[in-house]
Image (cartoon, rainbow, N blue to C red):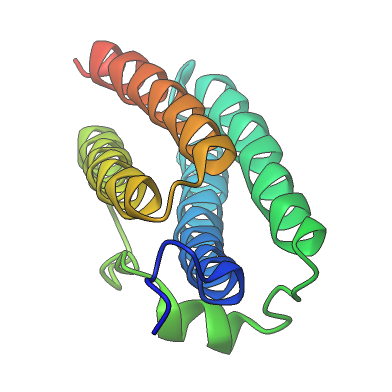
Length: 157
C-alpha cells in the first residue's frame, strides 16, 4: 500500500481541488470588489472608487495566476458561475439597495481575512503532500491579501 505522500496522482488531484476552490473564492471576491467599485462610483463616494479599482486589478492578476496553475497541472477550470458559487467558501453580498462605504470596505476586509485563513490552511495541506512550489505560491497570495486588507482597513473613516 502506497502512502499518500508517494502517490503523485492523488497529490495532483488534491492540489487541483484546492486550487479550483481557491479560484472560486478569489473570483467571488473579485466580483464583489468590482461591484463595490461600481456601487461607490454610482453613489459618488470620493476617492474610494479609484482605490477599489486598484484592488480589482490586483485580484484579476491573482485569479489569472491561479487558473494558469490549474491548467499547468492539466486540469480544467470551472466554466460557469454556478460551479464557482457551488464550491466557494465565501458568501455573496446581502441583497440591499443601499450600503454605506464603511460597510462595503469592512465586508471586503472580512473576505480578505477569510481567504488569508483559508490560504494558511491550504498551505498546511500542501505541506503534507510535499508540494513546495504551490506552498510558495499560496504563501505569496497570503502576502498579497494581507497587503490589500491592510490598505482597505486604512481607508476606513
